[in-house]
Amino acid sequence: MNRLIIAVTLSSALALGACKKEPPEMAPPPPQNTTPAPTPTPAQTPMAPQPGSQSHFATAMSGADTIYFDTDSYNIDAEDQAALRRQAEYLLQYPNARATVEGHADERGTRDYNLALGERRANSAKNYLVSLGVPETRLRMVSYGEERPVATGSNESAWARNRRAVTVMIEN
Image (cartoon, rainbow, N blue to C red; front, side, top):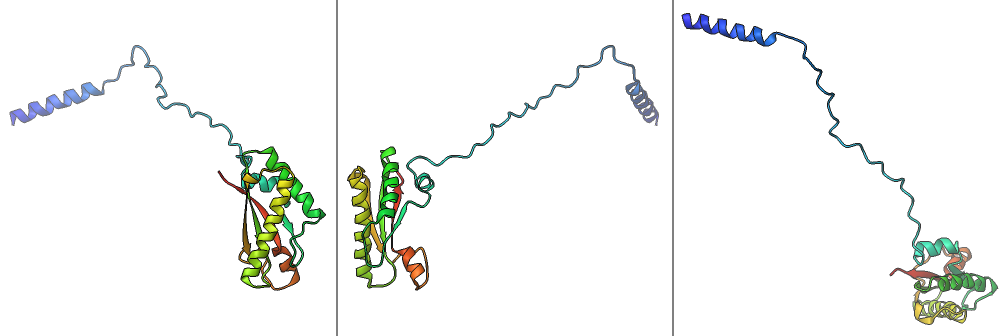
């Protein structure tokens, strides 16, 4: 029991001694900020389409990437010539750009007939581009016939939109 009284007395003395507060002689320095300040991120600028890409071409052409034909025809009229001149100017401005001229037909006629007509339309547009100075080696052509319509329906309005040749950039 004697030991217990001594232990309690000692622990009380230690506890009271630890609670004794005296002002420090000098104030401690303020805490240092250890987290680095955030680095401001530069404002994100929208990425412009790469010249020669399909999106850049489509923006530059604003609809002149497509020419339209009369029924059973692959003749290029004055309006088509203007669109093809714009395409040629673009292709000549970007000498690394390559393109595919796609030929399309409406749903009337047999599959074989429409594929042949689409090919004649694509070839007609391609030849006109070549006549304007675009190197033939930079142009491909393909016929989709009636397989890729942009307008559905069995009426003159839909058929007129599907009788077309579309120039599409080949992504490198």
